[in-house]
Image (cartoon, rainbow, N blue to C red; front, side):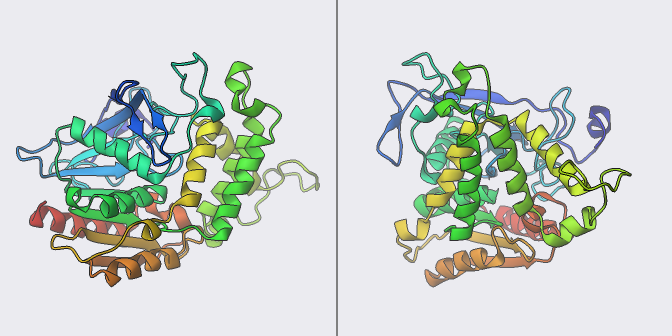
Length: 383
């Protein structure tokens, strides 16, 4: 993990990759959003790994979580680390790129190459800011679908995502079941609890109450609401790890030799959260955080879609982790019950892990073995 050369000799790495961009909607042919508003142009950043086979039957779409991006695997030139799901994607890995064609894109509303609230509005010449339309999970899916069509793929072998990515996979499979053969929904939820909505509400308030927020038009001032975004990230990161994980990583270890109490960074865990916030500021935008976190609050697909028995149902994998308290196993079991009530084929695994919500990003043998077996079976059955 220390550098570019090491990974280039890793037989399990997809190696150097390039993030590409495509315009999928224009001002003359915009996307009609779930809200009824239209948006165009829309540019999308994406990466692909592996090769699409002759009949286009081996394509799998990766949907990223709240603060993810298109760079899911491999390395960019000069990068300090691999893609965020590199341990899952590559030759010999659960998503084996010698067999699967994997597509990953930055979702609508993001800030890593896809059109979002920090993009310049061509009608005004200024950044959209809070004039950007509110979004829904459905809108993410529509843009993903447009990218899939652009890449010449018809029916997907699979769609997979963790956390908010799992919400996208669920929405896609319910709204367009004829387009998806298999859907893997990992550490996700079909309807947020009041506690989850509360966490995001505090995070958004921290951002919007930052003096530099400037009503969402901070791009015009040359400043950013860094304090508010840092607080939002620090609080969110607490929810991504279990108590046992924090205890194992930090305990009550002091940050330095001085034991003199004060209001500085006295404990190692405080330093860790501060570092996470600093790194986050280098790559993420406060407006995207507002918009994307709000999307999750309103997601409730089982209230929007009628589940009916289908002759060709989507095959589901639902995975939860026993120490995930942000999207606990109860959230996944609710998804399973709803799908099973319509007699959809569902495989459910509750994986033992000490790491909490972040487990979906980590190498956990039982988790990766489950994904490997499920994708092997999907490829065997076909689209």
